[in-house]
Amino acid sequence: WEKPQGKNPPLKTAKRYHIVPRGVGLVIGCATFPTWNTYPGMFASLATGNTVALKPHAGAILPAAITVEIAQDVLREAGLPPYIVSLLVAEDSHALTKAAALRPEVGVIDYTGNTEFGNWLETEARQAQVYTEKAGLNAIIIDDFDNLKGMSRNLAFTLSLYSGQMCTTSQNIYIPRDGVNTPDGRVSFDEVAGMIAGGVDKFLSDPDRAAEVLGAIQADATFARTQAATNFGEVLLAPTEREHPHFPDARVISPAIIKLDAEQDRETYCSEQFGPIAFMIAVDGVEDGIARARDLTQTHGAITWSVYSSRDEILAQTEEAAIDAGVALSCNLTGGVFVNQSAAFSDYHATGANPAANACLTDSAFVANRFRVVQSRRDVE
Image (cartoon, rainbow, N blue to C red; front, side):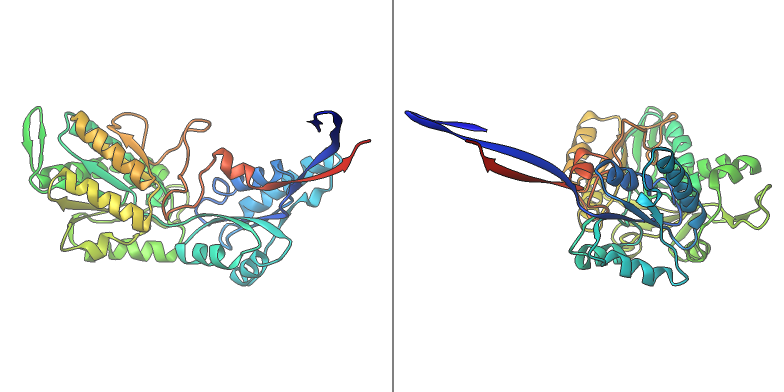
């Protein structure tokens, strides 16, 4: 570095810049997606020079163990210490997670799971950069539309896939209580809701397809919640237990679809009901549905929105609301693209702009904040 000093000799300094990892990257896995939600944080930390400790959910240790085994084999082949990637397990899994998260060596934490523990990490693990993905209330907004059959087919897959255990699956579906306009005339709220429920029922009528799409319910609480979902309101489609042709002990249950009123049933749909549970919510017009989705996303979080409308002004209004709420929006999906699926190398997962997640998988900020730059300098004669 050189700075001219007029008639005097220039100032000269030699400078060095060191890329310094933040420390151990602790990756706290979830039970339902033990690899998909683990790999972004794991590889982002490794790429920025941090060692990684995988702490899997107690119900999903094997996928993490296989991952660590392969990673250590690759490190050995490269002549590097294999324990750059390690596995953390203990009989008391929750206690281990809390203790590990507060270790001074831990500089980065990646977490997927419930909101309560995610908030605890953000508050207590002050020595680390904490990335969290938590609960949210994903929304679908339905307006006048020219392809309700295509919409219903698309949503049948969306609501069935992995039994609603994806963090991107829609829970709250807002439909104008006075119905919507179509090329064939006015369609009532009950008819729209019935088409969606009927689409799910028809889609799952093939036992083999149902087994492969639904998968199994991971947690006892999710299974019990789905069984009890008929108590939430008027039942449009009751959950039914299914048998898996290849795994007789698997817990398989079809989605529950419940009719609610936006005003009378706020307490029900304003909290996440994790699992295969969807609410058809009667609202006072599409603008009311947009406003409710925006407000809930800003206060409770969401990872995905979807909208169906033939009106450009409503699509634009919904997109503006989605931008305000910091949530990804899909418009008029009727084919083989679904709101709860993200395309690799093209779609972002979450935004970090609402309470459902404080980071995005994966933008540059998700990676760049895992290291620091430390410089040194000295005078040069």
